[in-house]
Length: 70
Image (tube, rainbow, N blue to C red; front, side, top):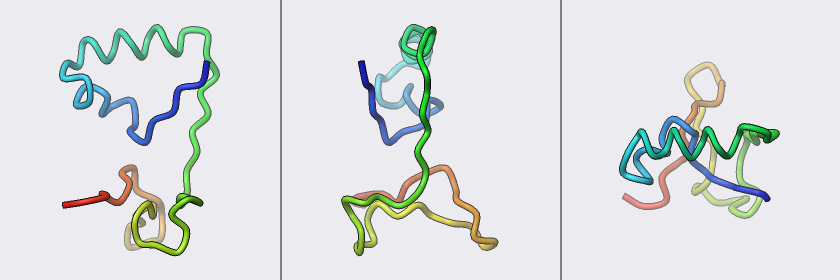
């Protein structure tokens, strides 16, 4: 099974409306899983501002993606 998300585990509680439910789901998903964390700009949105990984003043990547809409 492959599960893909653009949100870090720490924000899954926002998606599912309950931190406890999200923690239980994450626990069951990653128990015997291999987690691959991909960082960088989205290839699908290449050449557009959307999907860019924001960087701080020193050029290091920050955790959150650029929002799609305000």
